[in-house]
Amino acid sequence: MSQTVEFFFDFVSPYSYLAYSQLDSLQADISLRPIHVLSVMKLVGNTPTTVTCAAKGRYAGADLARWAQRYNVTVKRPDMRAMNNAACARAVLAASSSEAARQITNALFNACWRDGQTLITTSEVVDVLKAAGIEVADLAAQIDAPETLELLEQNNQEAAERGVFGVPSFILGDSLFFGNDRLDFVREQLAGA
Image (cartoon, rainbow, N blue to C red; front, side, top):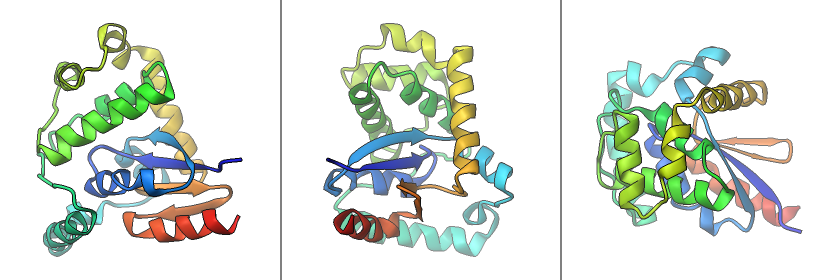
């Protein structure tokens, strides 16, 4: 029986993108759990230090380049402050199936972090999905629907209640792992279970 790893992520996070690029290497089922990380941070009293500390922000650029090289992925920065990461998360939550959610997540991460697109409006999110060959007729109306807004809020609340304080975070059973650089620990726990 395959184990499930819950992947809490936000499209505004380059480290979420990097971690996402490696999920297929985990011997597990992946449950995509998009959140709005700043909302979760506010709930738990955390601060986005990469944004508030200029030295850490500069370091992050070099660090991202190292991880991108290790994972053999391209990283181009969108305008993170302008990005409508909540609309991206809601697009995943509005998906009709887990397979559709995976396709949406892939298309949006690639647009934002591989191609460097800053997605500001829901319409731009839908355009990216359409260009990726994803059926958007029903999805487009659901992204901003009240029930989808509520789903994102529920994900944020649940993430905070379960100890998530930033992204990417992985929950396997009762264990929380924070950060792209913790994937080896996730693999070890999967192998030992």
